[in-house]
Amino acid sequence: MGFRPIRFIRFKMATYIAARGLAGWRIFNGLGWGALAVFFSVFCSNVAIYGYNLITDIREDRANNRALPERGGWLVVGTAVALGLAASATLGGAAPWFWSVLLVIGLLYSRLRVKDIFPLKNIYIAFGGAWFFLFGASPHLQFTPEMVAGYLIFAAVAVIVSLVADLRDIAGDAVNGVKSLPVVLGREVSEMIAYGVIAAVSIMVAAMQLAVFYPIAVMAVPASYHLGRRAYVKSQSFMIIAAALVPGILMVLELV
Image (cartoon, rainbow, N blue to C red; front, side, top):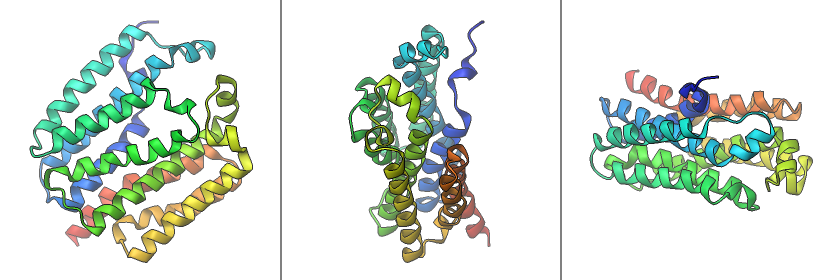
């Protein structure tokens, strides 16, 4: 089978991550072409990070008959880095620096095998992943209560998404020595943690009356329902959709 770059790109996850950056841009900046630059640069960073993760996990993937060509992976990673950095440079200000930091954070996750260090995996993903929100706000970054709340909310969503994914992959992670929360603490305890984080982020959104984040609180209901049924893919998808809806809600509110 020939090399197909598209196999290195997870479009749903890359779009979900790019929505974080776009939300940061829309909250702190006006309409303009910058929104497209933010979305594209974050999308590219996720492609680079995920591509590099595939390269570092090549032995595990071969054991599971999922290996991709390593040389092709480097081509995808290099191209994504070049395009993403160029797009971030068009934003000016601190944007290129923020983009470089979030890229390094993502690459170090795979290089240092953070997934093998309990309990750093979900914490690293949460607060490192929420950095994309700060990148979107970086051209005119102001440390306001809304910015801090947005960062914490997206960090919480990242915890939910990653933890539910770990619940889905618990059998494979146990075999490969990945120290995820479900592997170490067990399925039931990890599900209770997921419920707790879902409840906490919903309360935060309601308490601060942040209308732009209401989709997250609303989608938390079906996400919890499917978590209870152990339909992990559906539960994760609802939280991903909720985060992706935030930029759209911002645009609607501005037009009303």
